Amino acid sequence: KSKETLQKEVATNQEKLATAQQVESDAQQARSASQQALNTAKTTQATAEKELSVHKATLANLQAVATKSTTNYEEKVRQTATAETSLQQTKDQLVTINELIQNRAAVLEKAKTKVADAQAIEQTSAKVLKEKQEAQKAEENTLNSLKEVLDLAKENLNQKQVALKTSTRSLTRLENAQPTYEKAVNELNKAEAAVVQAQEAYE
Image 1 (tube, rainbow, N blue to C red):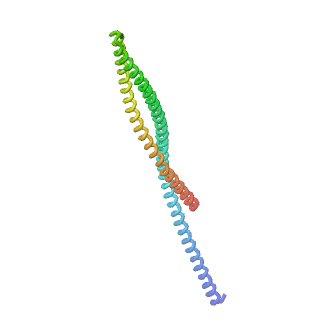
Image 2 (image 1 turned 60 degrees about the vertical axis):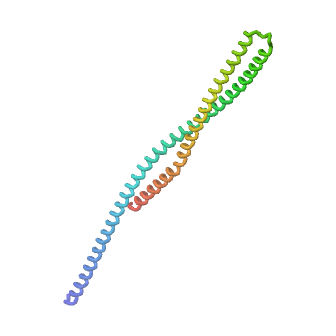
Image 3 (image 1 turned 90 degrees about the horizontal axis):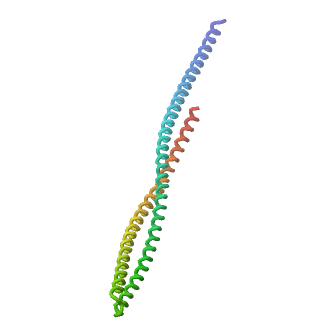
């Protein structure tokens, strides 16, 4: 081969070598970029998994609170129903006591009338008069006792009305706590979706 031909071949080979070196350099850069992207994806996945773990723990706590709140709510409902039943029973007792008082008052009035009649009649013996007076006194004592029972029943009614109001307020607070629990569940769903996206990007 002539010197000129050899020089051309050398020049051509040098160009091929330069091209090959450039291709190798580009490949190394692409590999480095790919490795960096892989590392970034792994970091993103690890972060997302940590966040998911935190959200799961938060949800577990919220679920425990919600369970306790539900139990408390059911207990308050039961207590409220019991208080309402007791209140109605007390009201019924008051009606009965009032009826007894009215009946006793009528009996007392009749006894007073009988005493007046006995006193008006001269022929009535002192013994009969005394018996009627004792009967009147007994009726008065009975009426006073019933009035005391009525006062106690009224006080009991007031206490049960206060307890019913307190139970109703507690019930309202538990019902208002429900939106907070639902919001936390929505946040967990979003976090789980983010982990799925990171996993897909990594794969």
